[in-house]
Length: 280
Image (tube, rainbow, N blue to C red):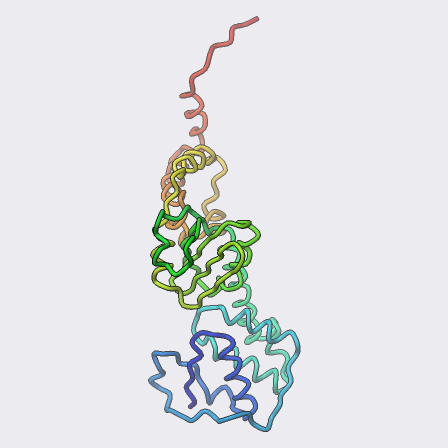
């Protein structure tokens, strides 16, 4: 068994996969065990250089594999190689959603796309702490806005370009437990391994006007239209802890379920001061 480690990098995996394919190495003879190793895999040599075979695959397959490669899960790289192997052998059904293998491939692509939507929707920038960028290796000026996010899959590398158009010429930094991105107003810098200084900087931001947003969100919340299942579907609970309004949501949901859905708005309106209008 050949045990490989691509460092969770698609470009490295692609080079390894090409080399394996050229030597006719079947999926059952190779595993991507990662840094932790595989207790059940005996060490085997990786064939040197390119082999005699030059398999061809459909043009759309590399892009599909690249998207699925961002999915974090079991057999992350082995599944991709099995799809690639079978398609290279002439079985194109392996990349189609109608087959068992293709169904899992497309499920992973769908999850990655959904997570990309989540980072666009739920990542929140806050002003960077003054003077905190001095040791963050992001230039003298440093970011104006920072954000901390914990995506379920490796989507930041592609998703971060969205924020260039969204934030204009502002300087910003996004950090996650794995990777990070910094935009200085002109150039986007992406790091596959987020520096600890970036992570510290991203988690140290504070919004001085956060209270205004919380007051707005609390008063905008309509208990009569609450649908907890839809809420969890569109905004999974794992994001709440990193959203400014996140701590408010459980209490708002609880109040709505305990009767405020019926009479909460009427009670709040009754507390407002006003003047009596007499009959004309």
